Length: 65
Length: 175
Image 1: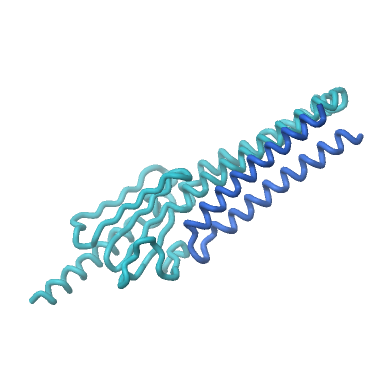
Image 2: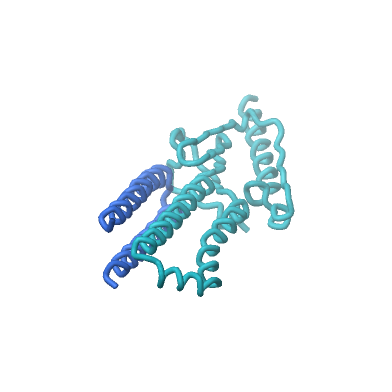
């Protein structure tokens, strides 16, 4: 069951990574020099990474403790 | 005083910009257009955390009495929910931010970004402009002087004046 949970977790992360790559491509294609789009994408990436990291830590703690 | 939203941009800006074409103004939609969506998104972010904080006792009981599997499922739901919200945020923001209004020395261009994959490009030469109208609807738009784009009357006046000066210079060249 633990393996299944981690497989679901990895699938979620992969979906998120694919979507992020799509957003990055889109923003890079239509962004102008000096506009805020890349900064907003950076904020989005940071939030996403924070959520994934927090979830991973919680999952590991849940199985250790 | 020029607004900060009217930014000077390096040329070329638009994909089919002509060789002698100069971009005067590149304007994005006012943030007030995005505000209702931002508020809904903010509420969707806060509600689960707020609910967990208000109902601390049941949440703690669930975490203490629940099995490892229950807690795993809760964590997976948490990650899926917040990743979906992040995706909704970035896609809606792309639609909002890449919706552009461009004024060049030859034409007026509106680039509409509808979602991620729909992009509409409308242009109108100054010589074809006969009438210009601006529209401000609703309380917030009136309060912040927004009609989709900031200062609609200023836009209307500016484009009309430029159209007239262009027409008179063309006439004088013809004679």
